Image (cartoon, rainbow, N blue to C red):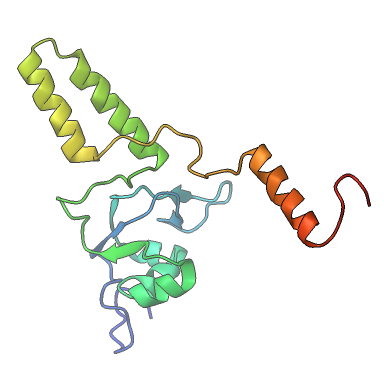
Length: 170
């Protein structure tokens, strides 16, 4: 029985030829067709990518039938929901805040906005960048509050004294 004629009650109603699904993550490997003799025929997903299902695709990527429309199974398998039925929502962003592709797209839009010579148009374009991409990424390399070396030495010295160990002797 092929995926096109499968009418069993347990068949996934979302994973049928001509139906669509979309990716919620970038970097997921999948196949639209069975592996070729040379090369794998694999594709890498892009967040926001909408795919129309074919029978070949269901044969080449059986996990689509297993996980499409079952968020709990996806979370159990991958720790997150990676695919969903239907086309990617028009009002959803194809970027994840903080991801490298988001940073790149935001920076390109920011530079275009700053290149506008008219101050009012530039301000509107900059506001659109903020609305569409959100706040800029943080520029600090660490948010860890570290203990200063003098504080650490003073704490260690106090611990040694509390244990009755004299300074500089052992």
